[in-house]
Length: 216
Image (cartoon, rainbow, N blue to C red; front, side, top):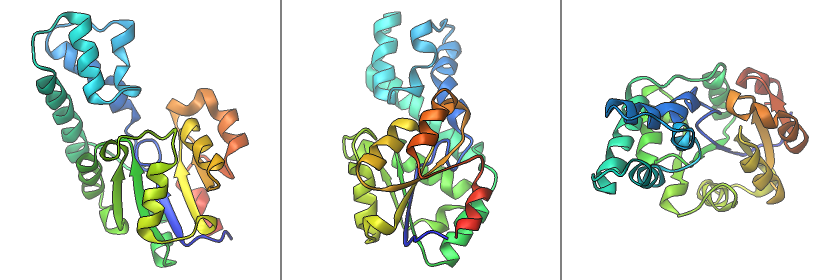
């Protein structure tokens, strides 16, 4: 059993099977316009926000569309995915239900746009478990800083010692551990190259959310 009064969750790759969408949404946007992705643009949306992707597309293809329009079109594609297609990773509903029943205060801290997060949570029936939803984009921060995790924890009002972070990305896990948080890490395909680093950094490393249940 772990001492847990607060839980701060990442979303993509932790709760949702959504990293493939982020991998290909930029490529899909380009192909809709009969443009061929380059090595640089193919997976740009995995590592950039949509504004940065729009900037890259204009530079690479000499597009005359305003950056605001490209950014909106990319975001509309992402929002549609969360509203109509996103699926939950195995064991996630059971894990959240167990935490909720235990009285744990649950929050979301994601790099994804807040409205897109809420759309995904509502589509999958998970929104009811979350007392707050926070996006790095609203605070001009990334997960190489603990700011978004601190904001989420302060919102739910739990102390750091009993607040656990649930993540799948190595850089975010490393950030949280250096900031003094406990971390449960989940396996996801996009994090596979850094699996050993994640295992060595996190307090626990699990293949699915079902594995969390014995700890609660």
